[in-house]
Length: 234
Image 1 (cartoon, rainbow, N blue to C red):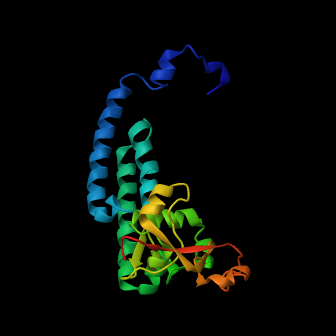
Image 2: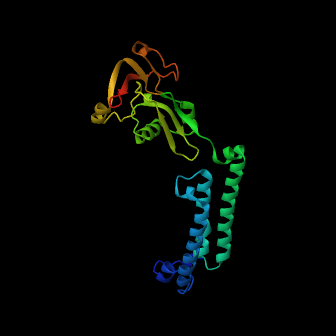
Image 3: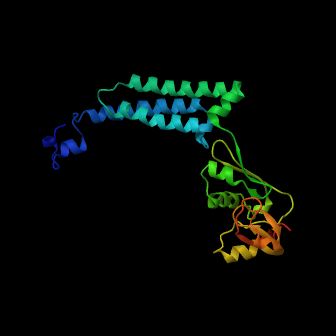
């Protein structure tokens, strides 16, 4: 389109475009047909597409947006090309899932693996850095699982598809509180300070209180606070 063809008061072009007005009816028909085809393909993609998506499923989902848009709106594009592209996306996802089912190595390569973020109450800082996670993201994941003290966490996994899995200890253990310091009401309700134990603010390592002047033996940080223990689970 030439710049002299662009007129801001050209409502025909702004609202309908360069296609004739009758093409709006065709857009409606195209949209209905592509929508029905998309529903069928989504049904065959499986229940996982309705939950938390893996990297592969997210890629297919984003690809679908690019597939269906031209088939619905461009007058020079036929429906068969869009339908074929949807069928290819379905075949690709089904094929890679079958490959992952038959080969564990292929599954790890395609889907990824779970990562241990917290082990026995201590944050695995190297793993957190690899996955570009902040402390606050880890703390938020624990709070969403009703865990308010890092010492209670036996394992925290970051699953291959992005969800967090929390496995707490059966009995309360002293550790680092993951409650926001500004919420003193919640802090007082859930936590009780342990005077004889301190905890590293960076990784959650606990030690005797007299070691406050020494660097953390796990992460070498010098940030210590009093350890807390979960009051409700005592």
